[in-house]
Image (tube, rainbow, N blue to C red):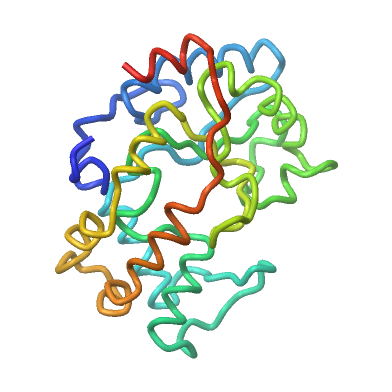
Amino acid sequence: MTPAELTGRADSHVVSLDEPGIRVHRAALAPFAAMREAAAAAGIDLAVASAFRDFARQRVIWNAKWRGERPVLDAAGAPVDVAALDPPARVAAILRWSALPGGSRHHWGTDLDVWDRAAVAPDYRLRLVPEEYAPGGPFAALGGWLDRNMRRYGFYRPYATAGGGVRPEPWHLSFAPVAEPARRALDVPILAAAIRGAGVLGEDAILAALPGIEARYLASVDRPPRMRSRWALAGRG
C-alpha cells in the first residue's frame, strides 16, 4: 500500500461488498464473503459495525472526543473528563479506545468490527464491549465460532490481549496477509506527514509523542498465527 492508503487518505485499495454494505481491501473481499457464508450456515448473521474508515472520518471521531463531544472512557469503562486533562494526558486517554487519525488499522480495509445480528433483537443497541462477547453475553457463540473458524479465511484478532496500549477487542478481526505487511510499513515519518497540518486537534502533543504512540498502539499488537488456508495464501499475492 502507498503512504496515502496506509493512512486512510486514499481509498484506491478498497472495494465494495454490497451485503453487508461495507468497503474492504480487495484481497479481503472474497475471504470475508466466504467466512460470512460459512457463519450463516451455522446460524450466525455476521454483521459488520465498521470496516474501511478513511482519515477524514477518523479525524471527526478524534476531534469530537478531544472536545468532549463524544465519551472518552478509562480502562474500566468509566467516563473521563477530558477538559481536566492536559494535552499529553488527553491524547493518551483517547488512544485507550480510539485510534489516531492516520494510525487506524481500519484505514487499510483489512480490519472489521463484527457482531451477530441473529443473536439480538432488531432494536438492540450495539456497544462493542468485551462483556457482549464473554460467556453469557449475546455474542458469546459468535466468539466461539470465530475462535474455531476465522483462521481458515486468513483472519485473526490483533487485540486479543492487552499487550500494548489498546484494550482487548474480541469483535475486531484483521485479514492477516495484508494487515501484517501494512503494520510493518506504517512508520513514524509516514504518520507525522499525515497528521501535520491536517486539522487533527492536539497536533503538537501528538507529534511530540508520536514515536511512543507508534510503538505502544500500532506496533504492539498480537501477531497473526501461522495460516495455511487458501485464502491466506491468496492474500499474499
